[in-house]
Image (cartoon, rainbow, N blue to C red; front, top):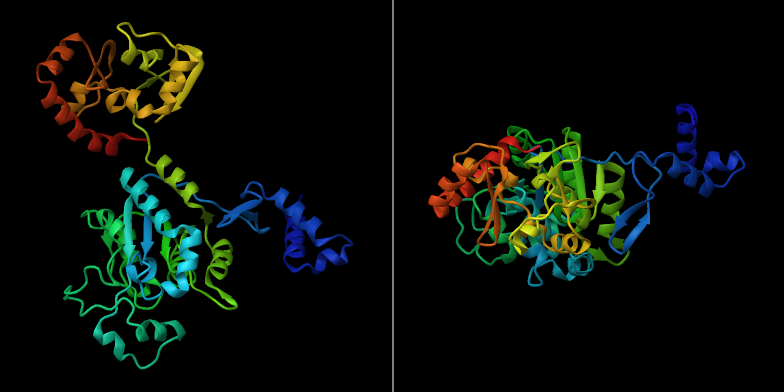
Length: 408
């Protein structure tokens, strides 16, 4: 199909008029367009009650790049997400059916697990904000019901447990000293806070958005970030919105997410993609990235003599391909790969304790405290074992910075 023909097909699909003139059904044109656009995405997009037929428009997608993306959570506060919050009567149904509270928690957790940047854009109203001379519809409502009220920008008295406070289950993630809490947005979008500045100063150009409320603050943040040159993904079931008779805020937002954002993901998709973006730092050999020189990792834990793995029985984990002596051994590994994979990506443990990456001799492998350690040679193994706890403590301290510097 030529570019000219594709353009005509797209117009026909979106208007439904040209298709009729051409003597074919709009549905057929839509089907053909879906097939033509498989390079941009899939025929279905995640929705809260399962896959829905996707729109016949491009789906650019986002390949998260380690160090270049941030998780942005908007308004993870009691007034939106707690049954005791002042908006629960209108947002509670959507929050519940989307599983929004748990899904935001999952995103916080995976982002922290991979040391991704996490940002929160909150909503706060101070006494002087209530002196505005005019407001939009829901601005008026928020002021009328005392939503996100605080006593002042320098006064946190009464904040703990209030509607403006974080949900308790999010506090360990937000209050860890690593999460960036930008200034409050005053209406819906980030035009009134320092979000874009904080992102730019950290070299971040990809933003994964979750939070509240779907067709208000989330959509406004999405629009502004797109306009400001960021790649933006919205995690649809980690948002929610008000439902009123004849007005479904989430459905309105979902349509615009798909029309505007770089992509729309479910929480399951986002967790998988964020985890994969962590990068890998692992000691492997050969074009197949074989770990442990082809020895069965489980065999180090179950017998005195490690076993060679079979090239026909393999499994991948954290950037390495491991071989196994039996299907049973492979199943044991896959049930808990983190237990059996070597420490520090299979690099020399003593070297990591010194802050350097060294190769290993497989004959130095040993299991201690139910963990597999390797070293560069027998002399270094003896030094490592002479101060085992001290060396492990140093290696554990050094590994995150080595990972940050060398992971790919």
